[in-house]
Length: 241
Ligand code: ADP
Ligand code: NI
Image (cartoon, rainbow, N blue to C red; front, side, top):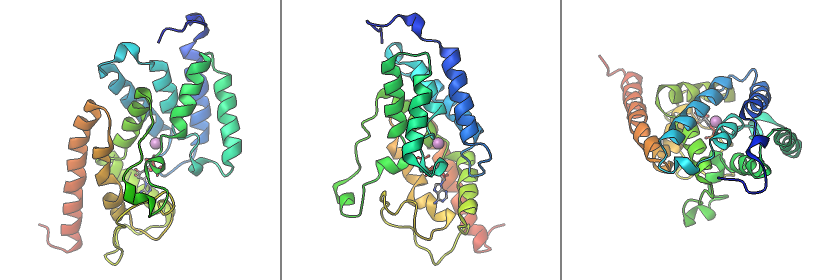
């Protein structure tokens, strides 16, 4: 995007990056649910990889992709007890970044609707009408794809059980059935097992991706999850070997 009213020199990627890293790394300090700084760095790396392969890369705003990747969990309720205050803090951070005003708005728009919960219907009756459209820009779709890919594969499995352990969930409980449909209301509540999270969410992710490269990478990671589940069930029943 070529700005008409602002000089390109107003943009200082290095300074923006440093501000975003310091803020985001501090926010997730001490996390043991797979949302730590290494998750942010993997999402950034994957998002930049997806962006570099995008057909429309000449019109993609790479700085927006990178900053939104680093800040993608910054508005998540997991990391703040006061959403309004967090909103202010993130806006103040963006205001301090040497980038164009439209880039700040773009980053904020992405991170405020990126999370999985935003793709869920609000409640059970709304779930009849199908998935909600993402309303994300291409940059937002790229960051969302990178975040979803980190919930798949070997790392996705590790993150799922780490999250479940922190939440007090059992690994598996044959008496607990996966819920048919998740809604924004029931996503974070209710007694569940980590293994059911595979059915409720993780197996659905590959069909929610936007970019061709993310879809390609997801196939392998998805298959790995399937293999893991089959193996888990075999061992659970003592039928392996
Ligand atoms: P987002 O996809 O928006 O980052 P979350 O923060 O809810 O959404 O989920 C991130 C990851 O945390 C999931 O992909 C999964 O690995 C783990 N997770 C979230 N909820 C659960 C759960 N109930 N049980 C096990 N793992 C979970
Ligand atoms: Ni994330």
